[in-house]
Length: 303
Image (cartoon, rainbow, N blue to C red; front, side, top):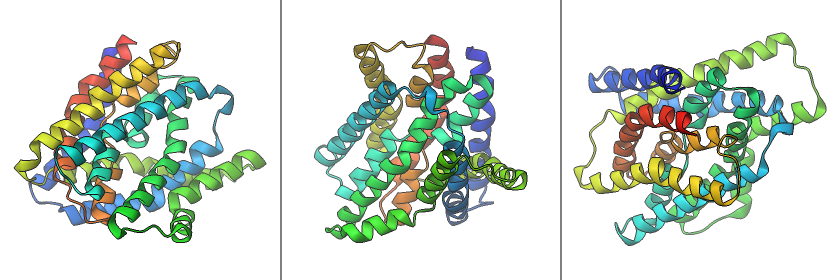
């Protein structure tokens, strides 16, 4: 199991490494990488919403396992926020970004492709559940960022902003397709598949480019904190919660692998949008991708 997962993870790490090299040799800059990220957010993520939610295996959902994951995610978010605020004296907006980075995994464009190859459909459902729910939890983080940067929250404006969010639109379209049992034409399905296929290389190449740029050395301690919480803290907390909830570790294997997955792109994307300092996020991103190359196969083979 370890070798299978390792060699499934290696090509994804290779994409990040290629992106990192492109940035280091100045073939692409961070502005160009952010265009890739924006393209993924506006076009690819909604397509995944349509594909995953529209074909969701609801009968395999383990709500107890999902709420265990959500609780662990919330605990890690809270710990990261509090330490960043009280120990490192960061602004609220930066603390929110640090909380997002420490608690949100790159499930859609890193772990999900691995699971599609190595696991059965019922084992992938827990990850698809988290992906679907994260459309909402990310939206709540955006509302928190709006409040932190503007010192006020316009509820009407926040709701309209989420309704116009392409990811949310993709989620709604997926739900409509599922519940109405609409059969899309083969050409439409193929178009969605083509768009989704571009997501992994675009996202990981862009992530690699963004990770290649020099960061402020004063944020090294903070980056180590994010790395520890994202990979090891999350895994430890989730393992304890699952054990206390009397859930089989075999049933929870892919969910535990998710906690060992490197940081997602959302922290970097929203830091850029809200003009929040990203040095610690970038450095921790590089560390989590290197460590996850071994940690994901290790978790998958142990449980």
